Length: 455
Image 1 (spheres, rainbow, N blue to C red):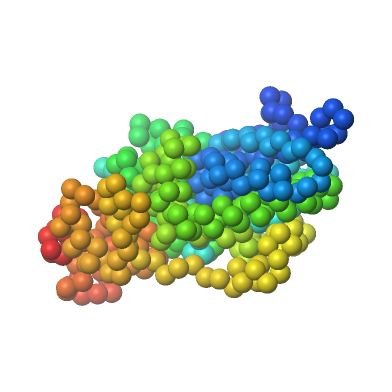
Image 2: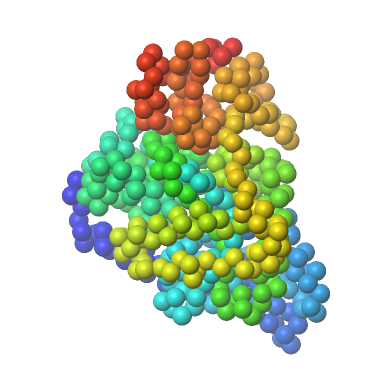
């Protein structure tokens, strides 16, 4: 369907301008109080964007940053001012106003952060990574539970909610293009905050919603949405990272390194205690722990590692073109923006090199028993289903990886295919049908039927 070009331009301009407007209610940054013996470090984070928890929600609850600052032994008393935001845009606005020292956000907002910093002569630097998925599984397009839409092509002429300038918007644009649709002409894009978009989907004023973690999984878990497109089908990395003002990093490198050591400690805690970490984040955010675990669990969609891997930097460079087409940025010098010196020093060269070489775990299924502090891993979907069928009243949540993309999803929200004696899960109807098309005799079965077959 034809879109009003004037309206599109206004939406893009509004999103861009919002990034430049400082929020005057917020406090100062890395500033000395009184005689200079006390320094306040201001950290901007997104509590409900749960792939940033090792630099935000979880890190704050563990107190690791404060402990690292106390151990510096430089005669300074440090205070940490944690400021919580819904998206990366206001964090960028505060950073370029000199009011936030360290912030965390997704890959597309990071590029806007770099562009605005340069434009306003307040340069910022990408100093570490929080959570990533090498295939792009952190973003998902969902529809209402009763929707008749089953593929991206069905979105032609429909209203799709997303947040312009976000990684989820990038996924939407690329996915539509691959499906042969023009993102500017064939859909009506609604530029909305995630919560607003979720409401629009529920009310029927939006036909689909393209959003980042944890919104798609949350809505699916609540029975308010079903997956239409798995971002991992793009097979392009997506991630969240930590950005710092360059003047802050130059003036207080020891403080930034303390933050990065603390972030690494929080990452190790999450890896060692995934259930406890999910419960902690759930308590702080109000999100269901089951939805948090979908992304941040032992086999979750996200892998957490502070190392800035070359594949992620390469993906960031590819993202620039999407933002330029949307007129949200011009060229971005990604190589100048990326600065791993601080995290490399914080971890030590050998430990950093080891993390650079590490790979995400091979996806596997998990069952979270009620009342348990650990999950049960399963090597095959059929084995997981057999366990669930035998312990129906004792299962808090069950997760299975998509057969083709590896994206973890709730077992009871997955599309199940029976192929001979095999039971195979898929995140979306489209990927399930693609598999069926290449495997004669395979067919979609309900979750209840899959459980019966497995038992």
